[in-house]
Image 1 (cartoon, rainbow, N blue to C red):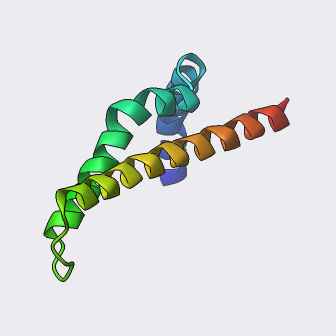
Image 2 (cartoon, one colour):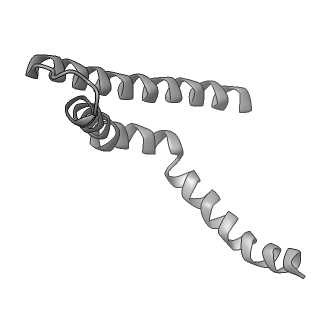
Length: 94
């Protein structure tokens, strides 16, 4: 009974997801969100941890800025790696 109910509910949901992915694929989402969300979030988290994590020595503002730049660069590298893998996946599907 639950399987039948799930089939009835999941079919329209899957159709809506497929339609959304056709119009706005995940690679576009990553490209748009990387500079707007992922890089600032990585920068903020790295800076917060560098200043507030217990047990770390007191860092100069230059060292904190360097760590924040490293966090931003790691977010960019992760997005690049994801997009590269996505393109290889799309190439294999054809």
